[in-house]
Image (cartoon, rainbow, N blue to C red; front, top):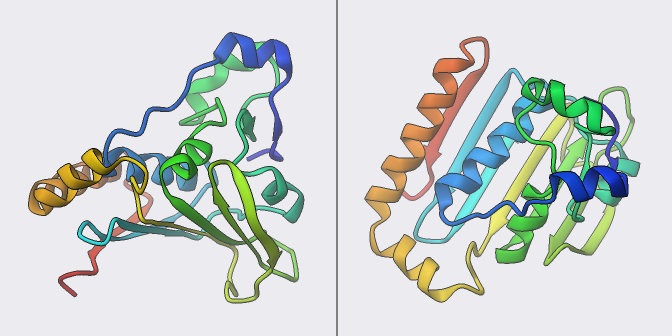
Length: 198
């Protein structure tokens, strides 16, 4: 995975498209795709539908401090730099730089990461594409990234109520999503834990 940087204006106007996150399953899917793009070989998903909480932990390449500074802003990605890269877009799952920014529009997002070969881990907290905290965090000892999403759909009460009114159905949808991704990536270990039942 390349370094995280803003998309050039010419590319931005061509690929402009917001990522619409209409349910918990889509949030989990986007976070797993980021893990796979970081070459993770192990992805663990922890969720609590009732608490509107998701945590995705991976052993991917991690994110440098410079990349973390930009992470969560609109049109910031490590997957596309030039329009010609669109032809190779199949080599990654996303390229518009919208997923984390879109998630932070509807939740509080915390990222704890340690990049390969770096002595320190870092932590960033974002909401509404705005950084609330960025600093060294040595809770993460191994290379990889943990993304925690809290209070999902906090500013969309109808969507949140709908999600919480049928937790079994939502959990089943997330399970199907993780299973579908796991089938296509047999070399990656996936784990899904419903923390309300464990």
